Length: 267
Image 1 (cartoon, rainbow, N blue to C red):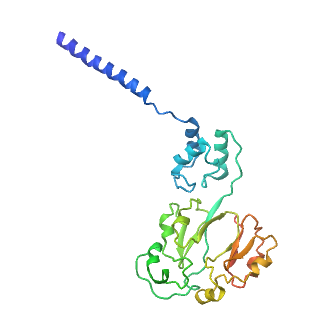
Image 2: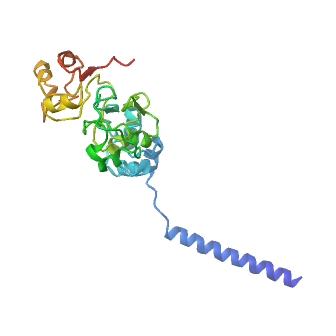
């Protein structure tokens, strides 16, 4: 009987000592939790897309909590999330503009010339190692092999008739396709913008006309037509300043190549 009692006391005493040591260690090595950071993280959507420029939602939450990132830094959450975070931090949230990815190319299989038939790996970045950066005669446009499609987690971008097309209703503006495109022809634009230049060339007019039936020739008719200074031609390519554009569409009507488009207003 004494043996049983002694064994129980030994086990109990050992457990008590271990518990005390663990308590001391826990107190000494305790990691301080930033309550604001936790609260901000709960407001974020959790996509972990990296579109904010930080390593996922945890990284952004830490940056916002310490004041190195604005409360509207999340491109996915938009104004609704920005307002929630602002309430947590105790600041005013600036109005943020919802954005979507846009592909600046209209050189589909019918409009863009082809120099040869490509039968290699379907990877746009790999085409930098083949003659002319791919089979299309224009080396500035969409290669059409879907590297952007592969990185999109929302299935918001697909290849249609040889060029990438974005579904603005699915796009969360994470920017992955922008980074993936080797020709840098995908950019983030305001969701409500309706006038776009569908070209990325920048070549002289006569060179553009040799390889594409619709490419921008830098004639500057759009620039002269715009009453708001929203469209300018630099390096032989028309570019839109969306902060000035009124979506009037006059430049689209004036463009002799039809490369400037005005989309229907989204409902």
